[in-house]
Length: 95
Image 1 (cartoon, rainbow, N blue to C red):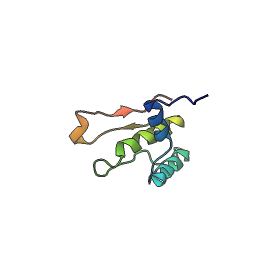
Image 2 (cartoon, rainbow, N blue to C red):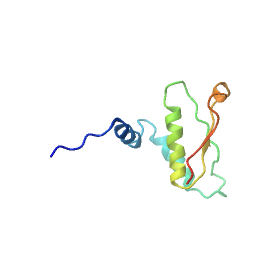
Image 3 (cartoon, rainbow, N blue to C red):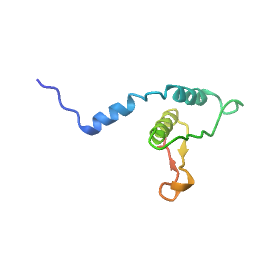
């Protein structure tokens, strides 16, 4: 019996969940930060993601927001002033 073919949406979702190339360090730092208690002075509550257009910043931020939501932490992100009128802040999915 032939295996069922995956839809394009299923293929894209599987690739997104497979991880990032060259983003392991950023993800590890973010996850380690989530493990720290809120009262720990090393705990950070704000991250700035920046870089040239097309390098995957939005993809990375969405992934980090999902990691936070998976740990029942609240996360949101905002765009720069030049694009804020088109895309305002967006909350992460509810836990």
